[in-house]
Length: 140
Ligand code: ATP
Ligand code: MG
View 1: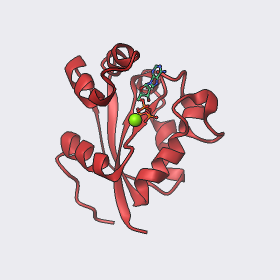
View 2: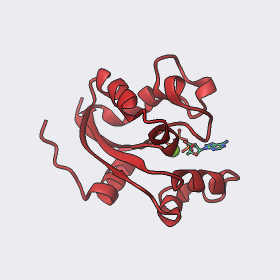
View 3: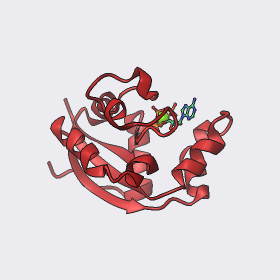
View 4: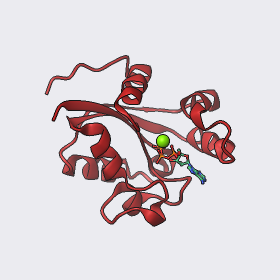
């Protein structure tokens, strides 16, 4: 399988509780490598742009205000099959449905405050990484 990169965000509920290290440890235990990360505070406009695909959904206002409510850590994760693997490690969107050992089961507070984002396709991963990091070379 090919080495891929995926894009991750550690969301405000997790940065507020100072558990980014706990989440990174779960990520690294799966074999994925954190090859870039930085802490940023999204504006409401940036959050609205990032989640624009959900703009018609009833939770859009709540979601974007939450994402802009405190700093987040944006990351590039690298490894075999990284996009699908990270979705698996994150667990279901609603932590009540997430499998034991997943980040959302172990860390999330609710379906809204669910600790992490991960790209849902390789195409979106490339777009999201380019947007936040301007592209990161794969160096193994
Ligand atoms: P993400 O895109 O953040 O990786 P996801 O792909 O698992 O999460 P999406 O359906 O894309 O889930 O929803 C995006 C985000 O919107 C969720 O992670 C969650 O924070 C929020 N969200 C989704 N459904 C609800 C809901 N019913 N109520 C409140 N917030 C929600
Ligand atoms: Mg999504």
